Image (cartoon, rainbow, N blue to C red; front, side, top):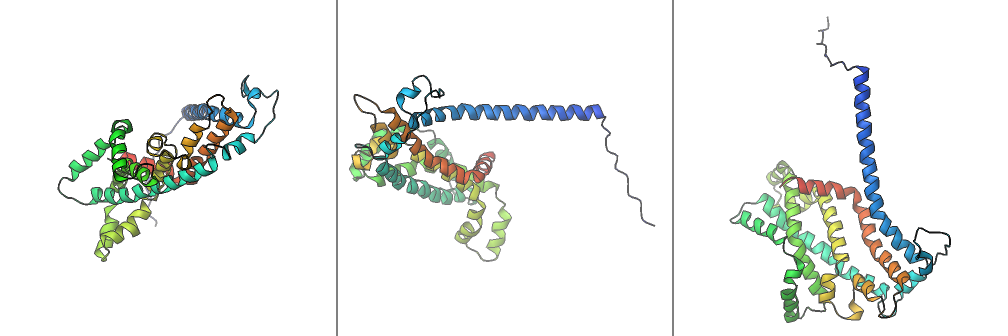
Length: 299
């Protein structure tokens, strides 16, 4: 005879209680969706305004860009921004890529090595050094720009892309090490110990095991750092002065004339500059949220 299994006594819910719970969940879901759509609408409205200003002549949007009584779209603004006589965006976008790509990957590489050391190794003054790194995140750029300016001149790196890349790298390292150290702390140590028993070196464990597991965090850092450097105007305007070396943000700021401003060209230039970071977010968005949550939870 087969042994009788004990019966599981589940709490019996009345039909009215079940319906009430479903209604509560449904109301909460609707509120969350409405809030999300409301925030998205607030964020996208300025973008739509700039986009309409870039494809429509100025007289058409004087009464509001949402007024479509007269609608004659044109690409004149994009062509004018691309081939601007004093600040051509075709050259400025390329200059921004020259600065942004190394300023994104160099600090991530260095920060990954430093964060792994803080997360896995014990050495004297480790906690003190990490505390100093956390404090360095609070230093405003404006507070140290004069010493940076003097140092770059003395090193011959003023009006030089290398100097700008070094500054962006230095400012990125503290928060990236802090971010990655928290992420490394969430990874299971047992996998690394097993690899060490099999004879793998620390360097091999880092590149073969740790880095692949850290892909969401690295993607998040790539998106954040790329957008930060791409949109930077403060360091660029202080450390780069030659017209042919201007970055995209400098070019957009230089397009308005002294006597008249062609808002169609300026708006088109703004749209073209913001397309690149949007593409980065779209490509990395599936890793972005996972990496941010995992890197921010454990301290």
